[in-house]
Image 1 (cartoon, rainbow, N blue to C red):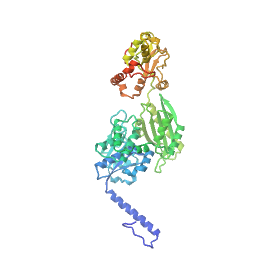
Image 2: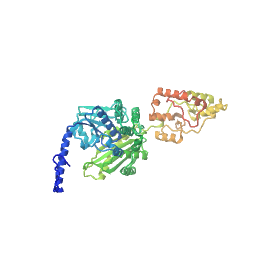
Image 3: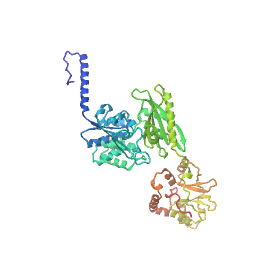
Image 4: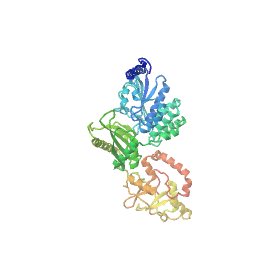
Amino acid sequence: LSGPGVRRPSPQTPRSRLLPRVRAAATASAAGEGDAASAEPCNVVLTHTTADFDSLAGSVALAKLWNSQDREVPTVVVMPRGANPSVKRFLAYHKHLFPIRGFATVRPADIRRLGVVDTQSRDRLGRAAAWLDVAQSVAVYDHHVPPGREAPAAPHAGDIALGLPAVETVVEPVGSVTTLLTERLRSRGVRLRDAEATLFALGIRADTGCLTYEHTTVRDARALVWLMEQGASQQAVAEFGQSRMSAVQRATLTEALAAAKVTTHHGIKTSTVVVSTTDYVTGMARVAEEVLELTGCDVSLMGAIHRGGGGQRNWYMSIIGRVAPRAITVDLNAVLGSYGGGGHAKAAAASVRLEAGEDADEAAALSEGARVMGEVRGAVERQVPAEVTAEDIMTTDVVYLEPEQTVEEARSILNHCRLRGAPVVDPSSGVLLGLVKLSDLVRAVQNGRAAQKVKGIVRSKVPTVSPDMTFLELEEFIMDRGIGRLPVVSTSNKLVGIITRTDVLRHYDLYRSLADPVKERRALDRIALNDAEGLRGGAEEGEEEVLRSPKAGPRP
């Protein structure tokens, strides 16, 4: 050791007398280095607490963008409080490739420009929230937009944009915040290193579920394509993109599955559970996802209670929620937003401080956590409308055949209406007599029975449902039997409607063309053109009917 204030020992200097001098010199040297560093400004980009891949990738992308714009003031990335297990594993191998610094190594006085990625809330910045008040300017990049909106909602209590004079806010409805920053890097012509492109691809992949989540956009897909062109390593994506459950996660999952309570409200099944992890444990989102999958529920709500960090004795609970596609109306972002959390409609989280005091034991904390989770479940259930029935989704203006019509007449009607089957109804009573398929009619014509009556080839044994059958029961009925046309009949067996696969798809609102009669008609025309030969030659047994809009089609 050498330098100012350090004296080389003489051969006679005892080691015990030398050590205090060395320590004092090292302290003085560190203080001098701190003073020098204070004269060098820096920009900082923050992830939210417990960073995930999208938060980290977006932060590194923003740092890359700012460093390409300003080479005088370096930009670094700081994670206020750790990362989830998958990100930790990735950083164990890659941290040196990115401008990441520890929280304690940044002095507030050094900060000039502050970026916040993947959150608009002060609470999700942990101890780094204080930096918002010392930075010269703040920029927020996020992609969490309330459902049904094309722009973010007005700022509310706890938002970064409130109380700060100079905040640039960029919030756009895409699947991943990394997409926003990737687009800006691309437009500026910034070249990426392969490790950077790989991290950004992992970020987009994680927050869009590999482009499968409903909030995924075309922009996310285009950004991924560009990242592959920039050299993103598919081998690395495959290696680090699959999260591995730790021993603690596996133990928590076992406990959660054993203690989960499943309730059904208007046909939507919700799993609710509270577990104790003693200390704060990252990666509980993966556990909640597994609970959703293994319980077969539509909503999974998990609360993990733990003591506060940093020597705190207060009890906290991390709330994690996940929603399956069937629960169309459930919006966890709205539910957990009232607890200071947020996320997406189908995946959100929050952290709440429990009322149980510092001296409360684990049992008391679990009881308090169960009470809070009951409130959360209640808020979710209030979003679920009355259960849909067959009567709600059936087509009532049904194209049907009469028993005295000829086979040729019946075939002509089905071809004209682009249908592959139709019910046969007694015109005087309205009673359902059976069902005739287009393939039956085609075969009859080919066998020289065009003048035969429809009643001679009708299929009388036809599965039917009642108008009050619930949608859940209806789905199971259709899937078990593979039926494409399901007559709905009254107690007196009168035909009141028909349910097709198209009606089920329309209920889920999966395709825009099914909700727009004009677009659907164009789709029908294309199908009819491509399938004209099949209509003339008949359809295979069990083949689905051509798409048609409700209330459409002439009666015979």
